[in-house]
Length: 114
Image (cartoon, rainbow, N blue to C red; front, side, top):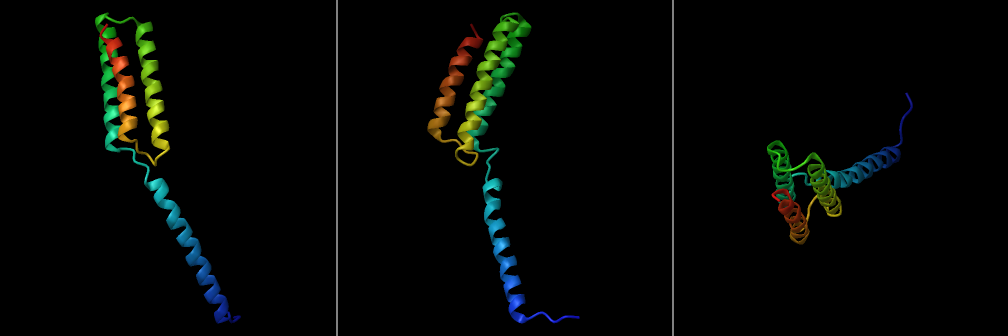
């Protein structure tokens, strides 16, 4: 059996250690994606409530299907904007971004009850 030089073992050990450190640093970026960040959760909860209100209004006959489709489309755009904002900051949105989204939700909400 061939004998491996001690220097070769040291070099191999350093390569393994450096490779492991590189992957360990990359992991928190993906692990840091905050799916349940409190501000995001609040925005998404409100969108879900508005979705239920739209379905309820259609069932009662207060909204036509076309009006409901338009409102759902507006909510989808808000949700897409929320996701885009979150993707810029590791899954989090700022309070200012939440305020922008809430203002948009308010406009949609007022149109639901009309």
